[in-house]
Length: 483
Image 1 (spheres, one colour):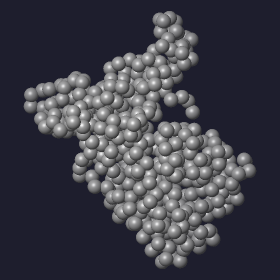
Image 2 (cartoon, helix red, strand yellow; image 1 turned 90 degrees about the horizontal axis):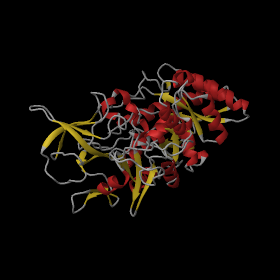
Image 3 (cartoon, one colour; image 1 turned 180 degrees about the horizontal axis):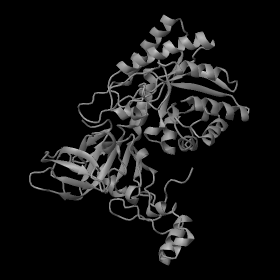
Image 4 (tube, one colour; image 1 turned 30 degrees about the vertical axis):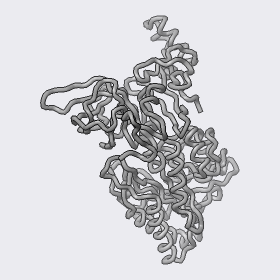
């Protein structure tokens, strides 16, 4: 099943938003990530509309950790969404992209003092406190700067969602949040109430990722409502906002049947209304933080096939020009994808192969035992549903530059993340004087000019072709700028 906005043309080429992905790969190089702007907008609207009937109001905050550039921040801001950030880098990306500060909320389990100072100075909407250390840290910074911080408490509600262990974030044994069962969460509310520079606005929980049913949300909400009642009794504070987090799943393979936003919203709203009625509490403003569910299926990762290894009796290995450096998810927790050959759609599946990357790790699998037409060098392999948690976790392992990303809509294809170059990698390197004597002068000169941003070493290795500096398509020489 193809993602929304995709179709196949008469040549057997896969299209996204009307764009031939084979042509995009030729223009921008591979590996390449292609994001469908229309699908991202549609998902933002679907979540906002799903909660529209809830009286006190809803804040749909895009979870920037799924994939964030200044262009994505601008797009979700236009759609009326808030933005959830977890670092100073994500904060500045959101601000540079035009997201209003009063629609940004700051998460994370170990916020640095400089990040908190920047967030408060910018006037962001909420800071989500994750532990007792952060209560004191944010209170001290707010007091020193004569500001009052609006805060939420992140709660570990003891809900174990049906997901990979690394994706379960709401269970009791987790690095995130104040434990509910032991009384830590209520103690945290009391601690916040003692700080005049903090204002407790609400509660937050996040129970996991890639959730394919709504049951866990009802259980999560019930426990947060019980805590809200306890906070009212202990601190004389009404919880104004209930943030249920994100985690809504998407279709990666045919067996995945994710709930639609309407179903998620209906479950959450019913649980909130029932819980507040039973405990005699006013209805809070609701907030949710979809990330993958907004951008995941809008993204497609494109790779060019290179070498193959075929041993009689064994599954063939087919190598592509990307791998774990731009998509660590299969190696990290066995993520699976729908894989198609974008330049030969509709051809019969002739074999099962392992698709592996170019990195020097035996675990560098992108897909295992996938059925495809007989692959040959130069074919364009597309991984569907590749928009979330791939580029944000990309690395420069083996000193390989990271890929480019393009945003497509009807009639447009715009670069939103330039392909890294060798110069980008060398720019951060330094050779101490006591080691410089052994380096060839030409290499020293190249490293020095790279560090100053003027190097001619600009090959981005897009689709096996070097890119020129300031290329408006492949963009090897420009890495997007420092924020």
